[in-house]
Length: 59
Image (cartoon, rainbow, N blue to C red; front, side, top):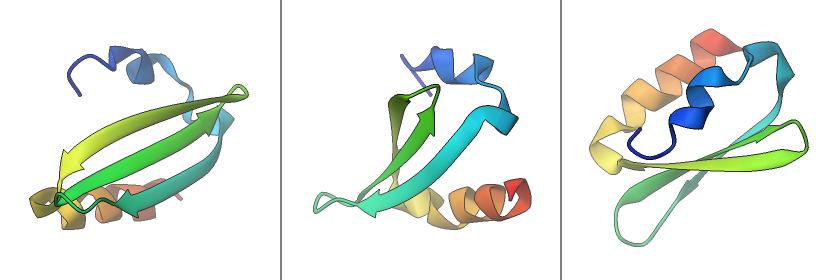
């Protein structure tokens, strides 16, 4: 996660919304709404299945 280590400390039960967007430069942008803040993480598109599986198991 690089410079977004603050995400490690967010309790899962406080996540209100998860959004996945795909950028033109083959990146996945994952947005988490927690504590009235929005945190964004960027991943390579090659990790799409891993990210979707993690979210599916989380829900």
